[in-house]
Length: 394
Ligand code: GLV
Ligand code: MN
Ligand code: MN
Image (cartoon, rainbow, N blue to C red; front, side, top):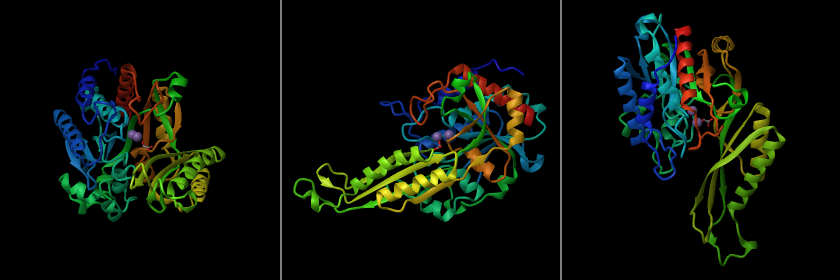
């Protein structure tokens, strides 16, 4: 089978190009359970309908578009990814996997498939609005407690339960969804690479070996609001100083412990130029190849900040199914590489579903930024690889 027709990929890519894009900065703001998210989900439904796929939502609002009923024909191979983004994200992280999945199906002879194939659209993968990454797949697999999920709030104080209900879902239905999980025999997620390993290797497509352990922690730093012009230095209780120490420590501790650490989100109250803050909340993202290194960074940062980091999410080291990985690497003659990025495929793998990932070369190596990129020819190489994988596995 060969893939030559880029028409369906190009049309879908063009359809999505303006959805949720900030016209000024060019980045995407596609947050879970917003109007933009609803447009993306409508687009998913429409693409599924064009291909005669039946869309079945699960209890967490993830969407599953099936070629045939897995309850009748047995569990199937699922491909797919997510459509939401980080603040000012790139076009590829998530959508590349879903657009490629539809495009791959378009070039396959569906009558030759021996079992159902599903295309999944996971909800709230980035956790940009409510703070917990891979919220949809964590709810599906039961690793995110539904009561906790319902009570998570966004920056405006809206709870996830309120957001789900406003989007027409039933927030009381959240919880591990065994009926959906039983339908998934194997999961395969295609994703833009978020580094430059494939550039260095000279390959358009790679296969994932593992995901580093990673997590998010909140630092609640308290002080006393006061006047910037009249309060003597000795009399100040300024939580911004604790934040500065925490950020410096995140960088140096990451270096010492062979890990990565980032403070990318900060909330300051009352956030006035001429007021000493009363309260600073900061979020630490820490990752590394070894859990001990990550934990050591978090402990050092907490000590420097004088506050105990509150764990908001944690994903242990995830090794993808070795048989599947080796089979795909041989089939596609593709290199195998680890990643420090989290993915729904990692959550499903941890839940015991044989899972794998394909990465598509990103010439900038940049991700979670509008500079994220994949050349059209590499996107089509990704579609072709995905189609060959589906053909081999389904
Ligand atoms: C998801 O993209 C993550 O790794 O934060
Ligand atoms: Mn991402
Ligand atoms: Mn992603």
